[in-house]
Image: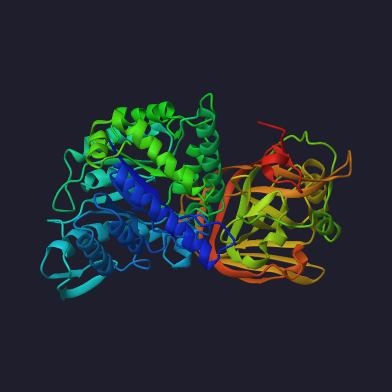
Length: 370
Length: 252
């Protein structure tokens, strides 16, 4: 089991130059500490127009800063939107290769397609097309990274033969992932040999079924890249405090704030009828899981908030169903003061990480757990 | 701070049609073969807070739901109804807050008001499906107040469609207070289509929005035939409190 952190970069109104900067600075301070403590990776979403909820519209810049602030942590796109109106595939190949070089080969590349009308409408992307363009992009990217010259005549995009440069530092190329939110995407991931970046929070049972399916299918996959990435990652909240009541209370505030913010956004399916979006997608799923039935403390089953014992239990539960990595969301519109976020990371590294073999090794190597 | 509604509901009620509701123990109606033209448009983001009560929060981006529904049969006889609703959230749930509705018969207006406190007045409401388009139109006092169409009809599956439930303002007969009534209809899809949305004109004032309702940018259009059950009232809300605090559950 490995532990990472992930960022939506959530900025409360009123937005001022200083308030935006403060949030980015806080995130980078957390990343630097997480690296020291032995967290394995930092991930950043790509979102556009999601007021307050996420100001991470330029994740490649944020992740570059993360790479510069850290020594060991891997830096991950969670995810890059593989829709031509958002990102041209050549630019994706170029930017990711550059970031891989700058980070010394620490890049992970998550792929996906966006699930909100805010974004799809904003870029005037056709919701019916996003699954198709994602598929085309993920088949092209490894070739663009590895072939000296690349040319392509495709459905959603084409290019004459050119040298796409630079090439990634990692050989043959960085690990690739796909965000798994819509039903069946875990099968898409497995069939293509892609890591399953489960951006979902609390429903262990639901995830358990997906994990089994994924493992079964990926054993006989036809990988789009030069190698199979068969890892399964899930997302979670983290607020860990030695005092049970403080841990639960602050953690529940984090859940509630996230839930509240996410609910104002418009899922693609809410406004635009399409086969391409058979479920309401990421945001309502996150809301449901973050506000699902709780234990005696009112905390949903798989959510990593509370005292170290409870957080450990939640993480062990995820491990038991075959999840390889948990990526934690640490804050939402700064509802948890920065010093408390940093202390939560320290408490987790000290009391929870040592109970996991990989994580413990990471923490020891990094001098964490202090 | 996240955005929230700021409508003065007393002022809104004074200038629009708010019906009295006697009690909240209404039986449901199942209406067979309802034909629904449903058009979503982005609306002016700057004024949306004025178009929803404190109990609701605006969706981001702001959108309006414009629909015309023909019921070929009902306990009040056949009728056609048009509504303009504002996409919003009650707590964390997507809802459409009804600004105003117009209905083709007096009998239907009375039944809808008596059962659900539904705020409709009689007008000339028109829905017609052609091979190239489906047209919805409302004329009140001789003036066209909504003219819209779905162009290039194309079949989809009913489960591709996610309708948003209603909330509307009514006045409690018991204490005279304004309440928001939430009705969660259920639909069994018989046929579903999608096409290009086009709102030709909408008269903002006629829908109780003063000059604040502007259909800015098309999102989607659907046309369906369903068996629709207008359920018993599920929740009532205090319009002046956020939905987390001001919601009373009436039915499962």
